[in-house]
Amino acid sequence: MYQRKITLDQESFKALASDTRIEILKRLDHSQRTVTDLANELHVNKSAVYKHLSRLLDAGLVKKVEDNRKWVYYRLSMKGANLLHPERVQIALMLSASLLALSLAVYNV
Image 1 (tube, one colour):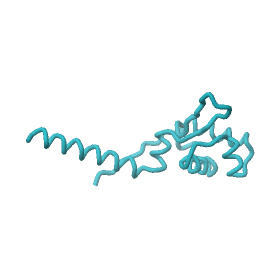
Image 2 (spheres, rainbow, N blue to C red):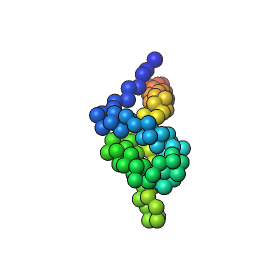
Image 3 (cartoon, helix red, strand yellow):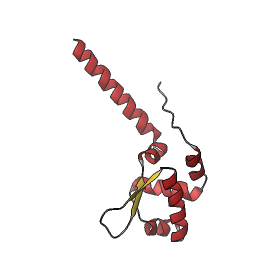
Image 4 (cartoon, rainbow, N blue to C red):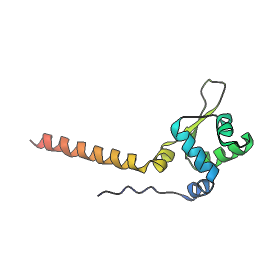
């Protein structure tokens, strides 16, 4: 069976070295949140959450969403989502490979 490997660089390892940052990733997996939302949910002060988010941003695990809104939201990046759900990547790759094989078979007929 095909096994998808997720390559983690040094920044990703550093970012994942904190339980708080891992908990932030899990919270952002459900929906985008502000620094205040995360601070209230995790019972941590806002400046600490901001520092954790900065580390996650540097590692490319989260994205900053700055619309024309009053607040800045954070959400998982594709890299962060793949890290939390590697099974989704594997399934997506297997499905796309199956569709490609099917279309080639139909084309040859």
